[in-house]
Length: 160
Image (cartoon, rainbow, N blue to C red; front, side, top):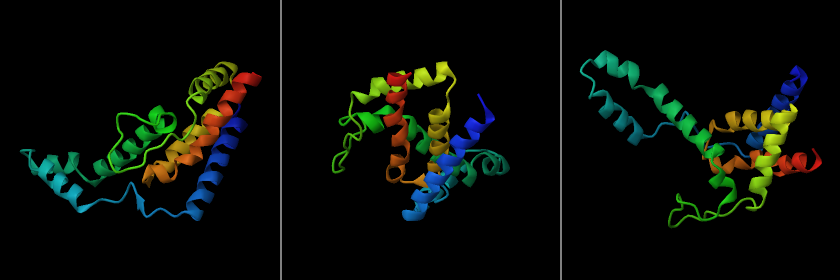
């Protein structure tokens, strides 16, 4: 893999994510901590016999990291992109199918084709964009930045 490919992929994802964030500024980020979370954080700290150990292991950084990992897991979940009626469906929320189901196996085939041929530009774009937009909450508002990967990956399989 060439260094220029990595640099181009990361730069494209940074530019796209930057434009999206400027057009739609986030009102929440992973660094937003709600009163309820502070209460649970203090409650978890009280379980440690040593107060210093509790403050060391249960602090605001752990809450930030938890928010960030939650957003990354949403971004890696194929249910979020391809399936309309999945187990996380909640009453009162409109959860809809974002991409057609037939695109899912073709996207996996395109991903496999890119990894075997050593052409990583779309994979780098997906990972860099995912890592960047995972800082913003709610994740749903920025997930469309990842759609080019799922739309272009099948074409790399068909052309490849």
